[in-house]
Every structure is written in structure tokens, then in C-alpha cells.
Figure 1 (tube, helix red, strand yellow):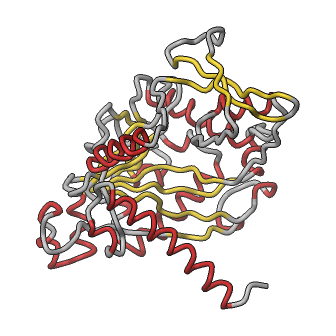
Figure 2 (cartoon, rainbow, N blue to C red):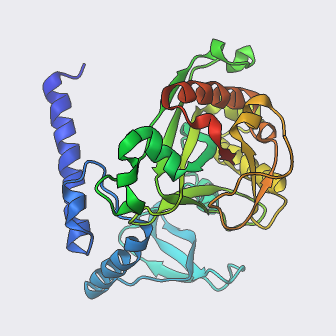
Figure 3 (cartoon, rainbow, N blue to C red):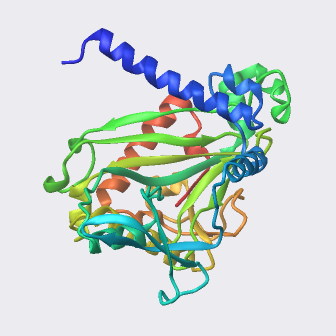
Length: 338
């Protein structure tokens, strides 16, 4: 059992690490305000010069950054990793890979680096599937969030330059198995919560393959967009993966891929995103082909998002949205997008 003292020590160590990260960001060009703000925010526009400064510093230390290159495979000798094979990312063949030897290899891959995971399996590397969360993004007019959160002070926001910061929100709900319509085999508890809330932001594409569709949210430093969006996600585990006949160490990856392919089909291609009003989503219907405007720039298409997820995930989202609306009074008023 962890004592209070050990918990406090762990929290203190975490805050120290976070403080070091913030100081490093300021050293390379981030505003000093992130050192004292309760919710520090850089903004996507400020990340570009910051990353450039990072890169120049690393190059001065002798680091070689290989843009446009793809890591194709590990070099393994006598059971030890001794380097990697790389090629130009535009080259679809693997015959002209360059061998780079090294004393150590660090794999820092994203959650969608499926080719890397497959490659690791080919080397008999043990992969352990982890639980994660899937869901939708919900988008509202930022003025609505400001008005509800600040009441008479909402006029002081002034597009991110006023005396009051752009309003945000955070919601969470624990869903019990008996609260939603799910088969007994899936009657586990779930957490549904908002994530990556972007006040004064926009919905952006994260996919690179037109046959798959995944989106995210971002805000510029001023958070001056007229839109607010947040992910609304439900935790999923091996039980959900098995329900779609996804098994093995890559089960979660296959589960994710199948959802993204289905979303792309529902959008009709070309990275168009399927959307639905919150009230229609709760009623499992489409009131028409027209939908409210959205910050997403590549186009939206009216669709019934009930057809996207397994029923118990949809039911968990519906149950949570109703609870969130009772708490913050605006969730039923606008748009959910996949």
C-alpha cells in the first residue's frame, strides 16, 4: 500500500518534471506565461518556430535529422539490435534501404505507426495490447460556451484578447454496464469524458490515407476562432476488440483501423467528415441533409453516427451526453462529428 508520503513524493517528482519541460519550452521561445498559468497553452502557431529552434539546437550538437525518410526495419545480429534500415518515404519498395548502425535504437512512434508494430512482431518482440478510448468530437459556437460559463463577463473575452480568458469546460461520467443497452458479455463499466478541449479552435484532419478517417482538434495561441470543440470519448478494452473479431497483440490497432475505415466510407471519401446534430444522434435519426456550419475545412456530410460504433459504445456516449447537458447546459445544442 502506498503511504501519503510516497504519494506526495511521486506527485512532487511529476511536477518537477513538468516544470523542467516548461522551462525548456521557454528557453527555446515559448512565452514565460506558461510557467505560471494554471492551464498553460502554447498554440499551434507558436509551435512552428519553437520546433525550428529545437531542431537548430540539436543540429549544432551534431544530430542528423533525416526528413522524408522511413524506418523500414531493424538490424538484428545475434539477438541484438544494432541499427536500422531506412529509405526515402516516397520509395514504396524496400530494396534500396540504407543501413545505419548504432549502439542503441529508440523507437518513438505514434499510435498509428501500424507498419512499425507489424515489423516488431516479425522480430518476435512481445507487444502487449493496452486499453484506450474512442469517440466523437463535439463542436459548439465559442460565444455560447463563454456566455454559459461567464454569464455577464462573457463580453470581456473579446476574441482572446480581453481581461477574461476564452472559456473551456471539462466533463466526465462513469457508465455502469446496467445503465446502457449492451449484451451481458459486454456489460462492463466505462468511463466517458471530454478530452483535448480546444476553446477558440478548429477541428483538423490527422489521417493521411483517404481510405481511413481520423480527426483531432487544435487552437492557435489567441484562441480567437468562433468555434469550440472537444473529444468525447469512451474507454474500450479487449472485450470490445473481441466483439469485432479483433484478437492478438494488434487487436486494438485493428479495432481502431476498422472504425477509421468505416468513418471514411460514411463521409464519402476525400477526407469529408460525417457529422450529426447532437439531438439527432440521441434520437438515432437524420432530420435532413443540411447540417450546421463547422470549423472543419475539408467538408462535412450528414450521417447517422449510430452506424459507426458498436451499440454499447454509442449507448455510453448517449447516456453521457444527456448527463453532461444537465451539468453544463449546452451539449444538446450543436454538432457531433466523428
